[in-house]
Figure 1 (spheres, one colour):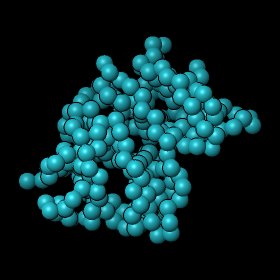
Figure 2 (cartoon, helix red, strand yellow):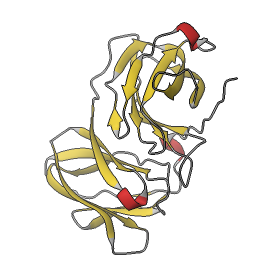
Figure 3 (cartoon, helix red, strand yellow):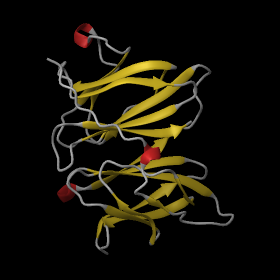
Figure 4 (tube, helix red, strand yellow):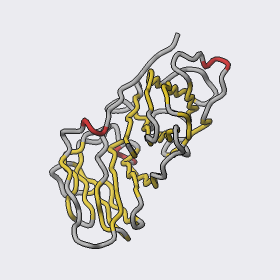
Length: 228
């Protein structure tokens, strides 16, 4: 019997986030989005080059893109209201590029994952989407991108054996309605079922597979808007 575990949160609904621009002026800019994906970590503050750019970010949420100076940037993550970093990393952000930074894994082993986002528009009539495996309690997974209601018993995965803390390539598919099913690699046991998703011409999306708050099942998915 199919088990469905889903909690999709759209970035546009994140009223609890306080978004601040980290820089101004005519310096070359990059664009950075942050996702809290550490299931047992408290709410966090995020700093870029020592300046707070996000406050009180809850688990399972992602920010809009923040405009930051291009170049070598120090990113810090700390429990809200404290001064002790749980992540302190320097990354290189190229001019005019878009990035997603995730705080991943359980708090004891929390680690940053920086992804380069591809905002190149898909061909006319197409959409692009990728999935990030950020659920530390889950094994490697297979991903099925199928028409709604498809029985995947005899269907091959669209993406196979995606490991924790990695992202698939962007997939390009015709605009329309899809259902995304995620299973442990080599099985048909559905851990995440998005139900029917309507994807419009020109959209680009990133899905992030997550543990339940605190860790473990039921697993869920966070859907992020990359473009349109």
